[in-house]
Amino acid sequence: MSKPEIFITFRVTQQEKDLLKLYCEQEARNQTEVLRELIRSLNRRIKKPSDL
Picture 1 (tube, rainbow, N blue to C red):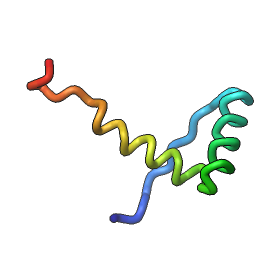
Picture 2 (tube, helix red, strand yellow):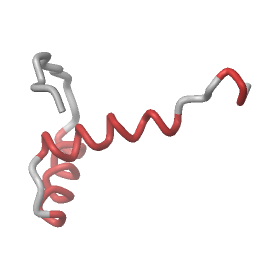
Picture 3 (cartoon, rainbow, N blue to C red):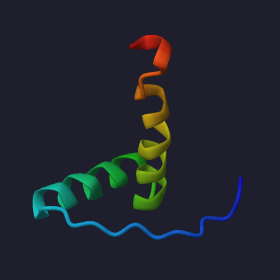
Picture 4 (cartoon, one colour):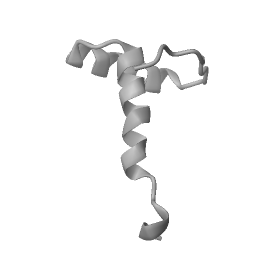
């Protein structure tokens, strides 16, 4: 896997931040790992032209 080169910054509510923190603690993973996995999972949710 290639080395990440791009930073993404976005705002969340305190409730969203707390939820992410709780999930990370529960899974014993850091926020970067969890968010990368979420982004990668989007590939399965993208509709292919044949699905339209």
